[in-house]
Image (cartoon, rainbow, N blue to C red):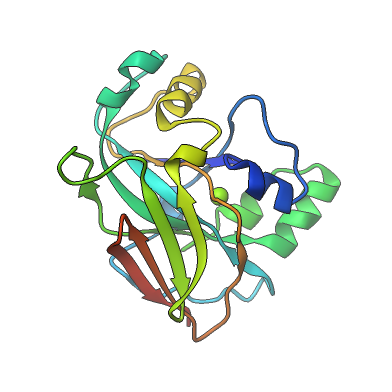
Length: 203
Ligand code: MG
């Protein structure tokens, strides 16, 4: 499986990092070795001094698709969770300055945390989706799917023009404003529509 992440999908977050608001989805990929799940702890890596959290809505692809039309995109996912797209912001800044790819800053081991997946049925999940991240009990990020520049359906239609989506692939849909650093000893808790789906420690 692969992990596809959308960047700059909330205009306030694009502005907080002094990036332009995009006119088409910006995406990058992470390998399966980046996954961290089952509320396992995240071990702060030695190569960075500025790891940032980015809480995001994460969709799981449920069937293979190529060049998906936007009106059929909803058939390609059934489950959702909250994830954290950990970013070594110091390394990312160096890469951006040199015009180099971001993989070193984004795709390292454990950089992609996922919570418990829940079915995205009408009875289970109210729209627009509200999600949030707490650190040590203090709310640090709050987002709503209605603020996404590109909806999940637009994202799937766009990405699948270039890359075939396969069952089990994960789509990280971008983070709202409020990103910031983590430190050893922090406890991160993420919820979707007030349902806690993720809780883990930074060690
Ligand atoms: Mg992100």
